[in-house]
Length: 320
Image (cartoon, rainbow, N blue to C red; front, side, top):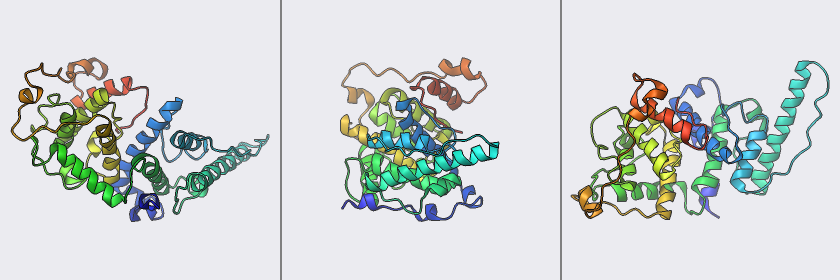
């Protein structure tokens, strides 16, 4: 049995969702990242959600999400007819139908898909228990996104992912970084810029310059999405703020590397040497390209965000 399939919610996710618990910074970060991840999946059906807490309770988005991930049809349950009556009665019946649909998809996940669900039920979704909802989405990410085609425990996967990151931007490469975690080593914007430049050598030559970390992360995220088709599910200000969010985002690069092997640039090798006198790559889009959309006084990352959100396959992503 693959131990990654048996991974249960992290301890902080297993706690009962209260307003006090939900004030923790990681909750807001995961809410943004996981909403974006869900919308990347739903975009294949021309759907999206705005609020991870409220938009799953009717069952429609959750059923569609699971069908996209599993590539199977979730058996439909016939709901109660919405009869004439007071608005309160109609709302109650609609709520019951939504809860029945959620029950059905949870049963499908545990039965047909062999997904181990811990401490989650349709009541939690109906009551908009954000921490439980985040735990459910993380379980889906583990099963369908991170675990797909891989083996081993989550701990082993994290170690392998960080080892791979260092193979591209670590001490023995031209970037000379030493990435040991998913937190502090990513917060200044340097690591993500280096990683994207490793895939696109020369496109982010200033990855190691001083500057605002959010702007540096935004440039890297936008460039990765535009040229590598890596969905920008993590907000620039959230890079390094939550382990699960960053791990999920980096997995897109991890999988891309398998399809298109990246040759690490050795320590001391210039871009010109790397390219062997061939023409240098075209520079990343300039800030001026997005000025008109958001105004000349807007921060650079907001200008690029506006351009990116308008062009990326109509996937609705949230960076705020």
